[in-house]
Image (cartoon, rainbow, N blue to C red; front, side, top):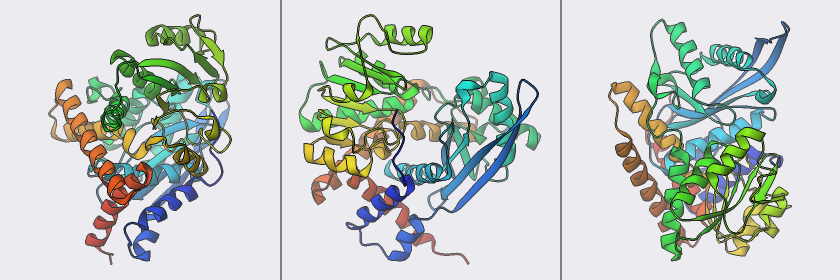
Length: 417
């Protein structure tokens, strides 16, 4: 996938400032919302399988606590850096506010290539990274979760490491962990379930049918796979899929389970027998009703936005479109479901998991799905109302709602000392 264009955090600050055109908040409040509360950079020494010691750079940024403890994922990726982590922590702050759950925002990551590391090396990396950031995290202060190239096993290692340091089990220290350790039912597909909920609400607003809806999904990881699978099972036609190595296309629709089996056996989408291989940019130029970018940020940019032909874009990834791309898509009349709304299902069910861990009482999957759909539908309606009332695009409307809620908490709490 394409790298994010320079100044990712600067772009987020710009969107906050754009939102304030419709709020007229004091400069001091906007300055507060444009500044991370705390940033930690750590060295993570890891003994590799061949006996050498390799040093990795790790980060944890706690962006804001005005509405509650910080919440945000951990990613392992070669391009992890402080600018990216800070931007994602800011987005997490606003995302929690948009869906109105009592969390602030955080993000963490380690600059590494997990695809070139063994399971044992990743475990040692995880445990040492957890030890290094343990001075910041805690079930009442900052609760990590999975993100790019991390999963429930990584969360289990983090929970175990933190618990060993405390001397007793602390399941509420992370979310997205295995159900056997206090994880929540429905968490694995929560982001995708929330995204599909917003797509369905958008279709109602636009008077478009779900049956036969043509869909292209960029990214075939946790979010992309489940989004494609849920939409397919609900009657949509997934005509294009892409991963980091390439893309496949079939106008008649793709069998998501068969594609998943192909990728597991070959390591790539390319070569799937019932499809045509394309480049990612070629797939982006294919006409569809709904485009779901679900990989890394910045994949929709000034170089490829002009070729996109879709009615709806539902962001499964965090900020997959740059500001320049946003303007192009707006001119094309694309109905945008921004990431701070569309992909918030993951943090909503993470909130459910945290609450369940704290009270040692767990809900069944139907209760979780019902609560999730209710929160996502309400958030969509609130963002749409702002968009229609102020005659602004959905991203600006969502950011306006998020900034408004965080700003209210900041101003009511005041400044200490």
